[in-house]
Length: 350
Ligand SMILES: Cc1cc2nc3c(=O)[nH]c(=O)nc-3n(C[C@H](O)[C@H](O)[C@H](O)COP(=O)(O)OP(=O)(O)OC[C@H]3O[C@@H](n4cnc5c(N)ncnc54)[C@H](O)[C@@H]3O)c2cc1C
Image (cartoon, rainbow, N blue to C red; front, side, top):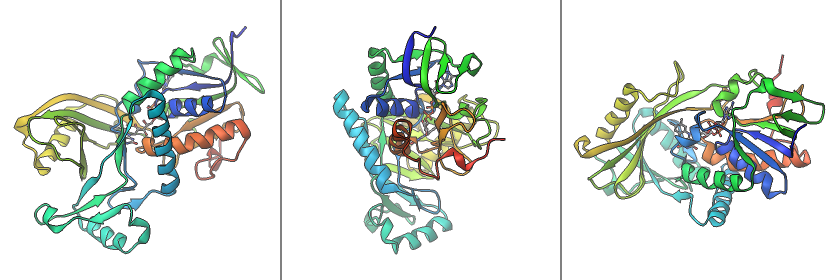
């Protein structure tokens, strides 16, 4: 007999599972959250950058106003709840490196939608001959500190457990599931890239991408802003900074590699940082839960209506998850339709 009855059982306590759990608790739902520290989480590797305009073509994220408002509101609320800031605003200076970059910038300068996100640098601040532009409404989420706070909170409520989920142990009934000692009306899988191996949702087109990132310290003076020159440098305090990230679709694993490290350190030279004054503190690797159509995966399984997924936030979890977690919570509680671009009904399950 199951001992714990809950509304929603969530598997995975990265940013997706943890922020969904928080949203559900806020609306009075009962949750149980399962993760295992031995199963790595991309959220623990991520730099947490929020950047509304990305890629060589300088593309503005769709629905950016809603996404940013939701992220700022949630991270502010969590900051007040746990009495410490988690999100830090920081302007980004971006060097336009290719002809493609330059052409995109010419076009974007005439587009009013971009005005609050991109601007020219004063010529005196530009680096040599290269064009440098400013990106606004950028910053970073301290994902590790946030997850530590949230996990302590869930543990105090006896809502979080360190267990490995295996779907073979699952009993599926028409209006609930039972897993180990937990009976839940709904089961939501938030397993990051490992979701692609879960037998319920392996039909969804995941496109995982490995990334590596370095945490370094320096005796040099660090720039005040985030620097973006293909690779980015994120100054954390007067001595430490993060440098990232590599991007790899083939032969992916979660191991930091020498090649990844060298690729990142090489980028430092073009950023004008002397390598001799630098100490490597940490070298991490993780796998981003990217999707083929670049949209998240939200919704319930077509054959098992009490089993759902909340996943596929790719390289933009810090920006996307707050708004989608709200939509997912409303869907689970009130059946409010999901945004069609993110609803997994767009794919057929054979
Ligand atoms: C190098 C790198 C840099 C990045 N930089 C940024 C950035 O600057 N900005 C940004 O927004 N995003 C960035 N990302 C992407 C970001 O990490 C993801 O969008 C986000 O963290 C995904 O969160 P998630 O909760 O879906 O997955 P994850 O964080 O991977 O969480 C998955 C969870 O599922 C659990 N789990 C899986 N299987 C099981 C099981 N069988 N049993 C129990 N638990 C299980 C894991 O333990 C974990 O808790 C980066 C990613 C990488 C790799």
